Image (cartoon, rainbow, N blue to C red):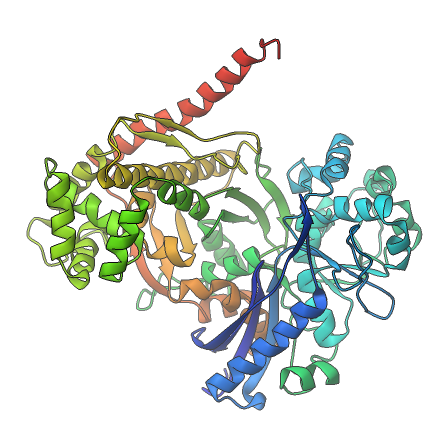
Length: 628
């Protein structure tokens, strides 16, 4: 293993910014830097970025992180990239080719992941019912790459003829760094219909039989991309590598000079950002627990990873479940082979709006300005104030509005945090947390919390459902509204929304396990959600499994990208070894027992959660009779 002077850089290109982080061999972030990037939005559903601006921002961020860390370039032994699944268009010289129908500039050459210009093309590809589609959810999204490529052919013929390379953004970054056109299995399998496993090939499927391509020519011919086939797939990739595979000769001279790193620094094949977040947390081990290890034994490794669900929470939430054999789950993307963990299959689900939904509920309440003022006075996040209101009401259910506000104003923020830390989390099955009769108190307190929203129910599909219904037309529902519009009503609405998001997670786990997965614990990353103690305990109690929070979980995507560089550098013998060495457990939240009244309460509310979906569908069925 390396010494303390060994570091790896992970670059995470998100929708709005580039972040570069420097990690040591234990996976701890030493320093980072973030730089904003622009998005051009000239018409509805059209979102474009510039690969040149993105690369310039990568260069600037890496250099600034190195400067802040006071680290010599020779100490950086590997580099990895993760990025949104956006489509980059380049000419034969690797220069930008514009993708906008609203101007002629080549500068805007990236179709952003959230761009929905290719909705019709996606629907036509889905309508083919081609067998390949079952490997990425049976329903093609306009966010996938094939519909976007087809849209360019049908709408920008002059640009289409100039494009020599269609690349996912993460592959563009490795191309810039190494000049290698090798594509990563991760984005190709998840976003372009590439089949990465020999298990998927049969004589009847007419797949190319060479070692470098799993493209299905029948699919491309059927959807109108026959030129891609005739050209031998050169525009979409003929050389494909598993994530973390060292590319070419490492950093090329130009990129090394730009980044301030050594020529030849190993660069690993890239990943989509959410998947990098998954590998950044799933290997986390609990220090001092000899049984909590992935080890190097492949069968034992697969068994442990199959039990862990990655939950990457943010504006929306992605869920990643791994399996040693393909598991087909209705309404869930995949299974994808080697898209996240080498030689394992991946099922990918999600909730379309989580952090965004909480924000929507809270900021649209009439008491939000007052809540914001209270939070500012206490130097706390608004959610911490709402959590404290729930804490107060659970302790004294008949507390008046005046008493609640007075208690907030008279209690210092550090005491608030300490009280909530003690009240909201079970961090180990038998830990007393300094209180007498802790188990009894915990259950009693939890039930008092749950009583606050006993008859307030929310269906969180305000922005549709990504999984397991895969229905973007679904909408949110609220049952149990009264005339109270005080800050107490806002706290209850917020709490009910937290619970609804937890029931969405429970539903997905139930569907995954019902189809053949073996999820037994959730590994969570995502700044705000992962630090919200009320949410964490509700999640654990609702789903009925431990929730694991890794150290520095908010940097999981950058850490996952750094692991790609670490594996490429050969400092780790395998990807799993890097995963378990560079990620540690910070905290584990345990659910109340199977016989607890808390579990029974959540079971009943989950029944209501499922019923609300059925009711919405029933309402729609009734309204189909409308003459309008």
